[in-house]
Image 1: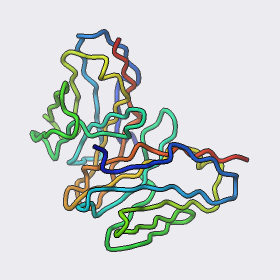
Image 2 (image 1 turned 90 degrees about the horizontal axis):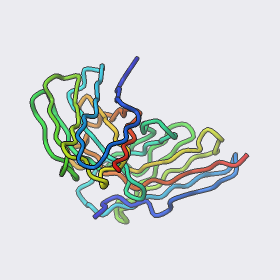
Image 3 (image 1 turned 180 degrees about the vertical axis):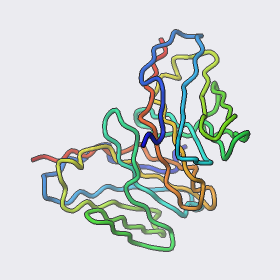
Length: 113
Length: 113
């Protein structure tokens, strides 16, 4: 019963480096999303996808790219990391039916120096 | 500008007593409200929800109350247990986009033995 799996759990980057945060779900969920959690701000939606091949921007999309080539995977790319992207990142998935629950991964703690 | 606000960053309560967590929202289009619970180093997990057509929803020790006219909801935990010590996030969604959640900043609950 894996649910939503995120890798890595921790990452330290230097300003300007690029990296990809991985997210996979095994529940055949159509909807997947990325949130970031910052102190005093709660969770904010970065990007989301309602199905393979379809992505859209959330509340704070700048500096991040996503793609959805399969139902299972939804990677988040940082092309040129900035200190402002230091945060905890959560991937979530949902069946997408009305009033369906969001299932979250355990998070990736990212520090950009 | 945050549309969901949890103005109490922390709450300390004695075991066996009631915990009351408050949440306010500004977007009148929100029609579905949820509470998520988060332990350290884990992702948020769904706790309880309420639709705008109701004013109360109960699940065991957890009850959520909704006051639409005041744009306010609260979560009651009775009785509080040590395992309830966690961060609680209030979240809301609008219309058919109920997989796109707006979150509050969270309230850290500590249950004292």
